[in-house]
Image (cartoon, rainbow, N blue to C red; front, side):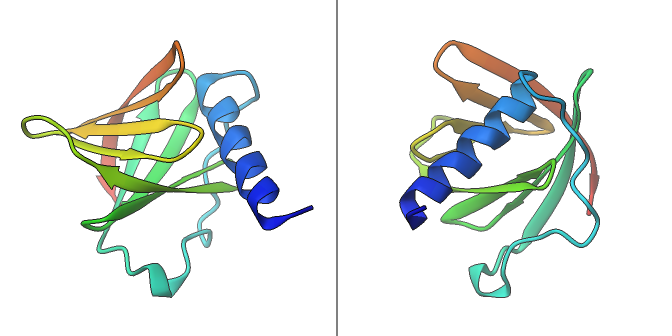
Length: 116
């Protein structure tokens, strides 16, 4: 499988897990992003009826961890106080303690639980 196909499959699987098509499991403790991505913030969010996702981020990109999957997203312009990250599969918007995951017409809203 090519690297691009693998990244696409991982991102699609992550979103399917988060929006409820597949069961969502909490990200395992030691799972994280590679050190060279240099994420300075790591936050945990609870998605109602689904479980926990972890968002690691810096000023230019983010990594979303859930159920053994990791997907990298890149910052895009956003309005007001919100932060927005996107890849080819989906969009993540962060505003205060609310994390919104979107793909086409599907959307799920999660609330921050703690800094990890």
